[in-house]
Structure formats: structure tokens, C-alpha cells
Length: 154
Length: 108
View 1 (cartoon, helix red, strand yellow):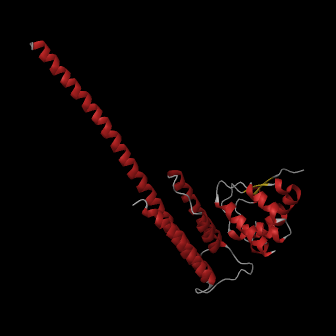
View 2: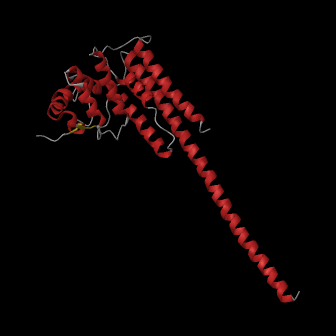
View 3: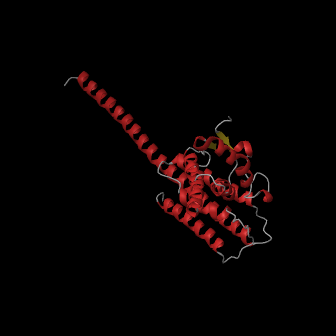
């Protein structure tokens, strides 16, 4: 083997190693991007579901105060707006994840329990009344649905 | 003939309580001054636009739509109208309003 052909072989090997190095870098970059994107998505959905759960609990507490406490400082328009914020959060999560389909019935039952006034508009009610139980049960169902959803992201 | 589109935001951007005695922009007022006249004029061709409003309480919705059935509107016509309801801001409103109409229908 001449000196020139040895030198050419070496250069070829170095060039090949260079290309392989680049290829590996690109492959690792793509894998890293996909892994961190998936992790970011999970984290984002987790945080929003936790926010949703907190808000449901807050609405439950506020609405029980509204309905039971004669000296409540809570007022109905505020409860209504808070329910709207739940809808906004749901829409946000739906925009992040096609698999998140907001639980229509559970949400509507919760909103009705919180904001639907009977025709006789009786307030305050007892903490043991059917209305109070309805609020707590509807809140529980809505939270349960989202807790199950949360588990799919952990 | 007036437009067959009824925009709730033109009535109020914050629909109020159930009855007129409880406050402004009530479900009772909306039903009697806007919804019933529009239904009588346009029937199943009426398009109701619920968007552009801050939010709806369940009492407002029940008194408006459930109340429309109690006022003698044919539930079948109302359900047809609800099929075409516009509610992109709060998609669950369609389901909720349907439930009020169906509940009233079952009590007829």
C-alpha cells in the first residue's frame, strides 16, 4: 500500500466518522426533543387539571356558603363567573390534548347544583338538605372524573 | 319581518337571575320580551346566538327555555331551534338547555 492510498483511506475514515457523528447528534436531538415535548405536555396537563380541581373545590365551598349561611358574602353572579372559568380551563386543556374531552354531563350537573335557584328561591338551606348534598355530590363526581384523568398523566 | 337571529348579547352581556323581581336582565324578561316573540315569528328557523356574554346562570336558562315550554311553545320546535344554537364560548350550554326543555316536556 502506498503512502498516498494510506493517507486517502485515513481521510475517508475521518470523514465517515464525522458524518456518523453528525447523524448521531441529529438522532439524539430528535429523541431528546420528543421526550422533553412529551414531558412538557404531561406537566402542562397535570398543572391544568390540578388548577381545575382546586377551582371545583373552591366553587363547592363558596356555593355551600352562599346557600347555607344567611350572612354570606358570596353572591350568585360570582358563582356563575367561576363556573365559566371552569369552562375556559376545559377549553384550554382541549386545545392542548385531543384526548381530553370535557365531561359535559358532570359539569352541567355541577353548575346546576351550584347556580340553579328553585322557583321559590328558598335560602338559607340546611347543611343536611338535598340541595347541599346535590352540590357536594356533583362536585365529587366532577373531581373524580378529573382525578382519573390526572392519573393518565402521572 | 325581523332577522331570524336572536343574539342574547344584544339583550344583556350579563344575563341575570330567574325572575324580574330579582334583578335586571332576568330569564323571565328575556323569555317574554325576546325569546317568545322570536319563536312565534320564526319558529324552527330561529337561530339563537349565546356567544358574547360573560356567563349564564342555570336559573336564567331554565326560566327562559324551560319557561318557554311552560308558556305553550311546542317542545319539538324548541328542540329544533336548540339543535342550531350557537354557543362556541360555552359548548355545554346546548346540553344544559336541552335538558331543561326535555324535563319540561316530560312534565306536560
